[in-house]
Length: 424
Image (cartoon, rainbow, N blue to C red):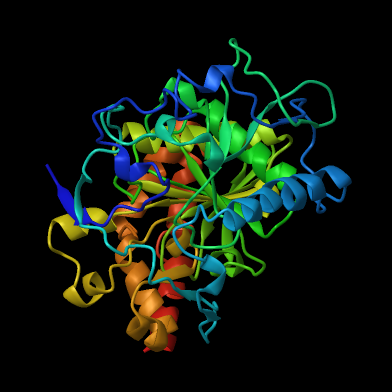
């Protein structure tokens, strides 16, 4: 069994009390079965009608209301109430000079007064454990609103909505240890106590949230177990940052376009090898393909991270091995001393640093060196990619062989080599 010790991220003010003897919820207005079914939290009901993916940015009043008034407005309300562990808006942030423009943030408050905890990193799928902290123990004051499918072609908002017993509620809650403005958690079907594993319905819910936000600067991320998820209760993270992520600037090499209109590409000239899925005839077709990719990674015990970008129209998937290397003692002490856990945001180019020294000395060479440790090797990535494409029907085996011969080591290997030369 491979394990690593790391400081767990505190995402809720109730997390510290998870081991308390008294049952949480009763009398505490929590998200458990005792309180949530009789609650009347605000509800944002998005339209659940299949429709073509919009190529241009969504410009309507519903997007402005959802992102600015509802999500960010309520997030600021919770900040004014003092529910966050620190003021993330006061954290120093800078763009590191270089080709990709990695973003560095000094966040010294995120791991204060916490002891390292042991996490198992060699099993992507682990059963839900109700004795450990989970989101049913979160207080409802940390919840911004419910986010669920409605009817018709237009979204609806209700200030107080009773829970439908036949429709498990999904909620959006604050992350009390934010790494950026508007940092929230999307918790699908919270009462079902699902472990941290993607399924088609939960992934489509995340894409709907990106679509409703209607801004390329609002992104969602997912970390599997073994890829720096610390809470084994299904959730996505999201926040607003008004600049392009480095991974969004990186070029891609197209592999194919599926019958559903989804463009499948390889990420090029970037330190972490990954796959990119774009557009599709409908949001559901894009979601179905990418969720099948995630499920394949889960069933084959490959840790991975996902970035949902461009209002849900562009998705990056990164198989990774950093935690495994760390458990095997194959990561340099220099990188370990930074205490950077390369999860989805770091892989996408937003480096959250905990020491002032690392922040002041941050360079593109450092970011590249760290993220290169995250990536699967070229041979391993090609092997995974070939099996994945065959299993999901993305590319036929004979087509995959031709593509492999053309791109296996050419553009990708050259771009990595060129990047290293520049950084040295």
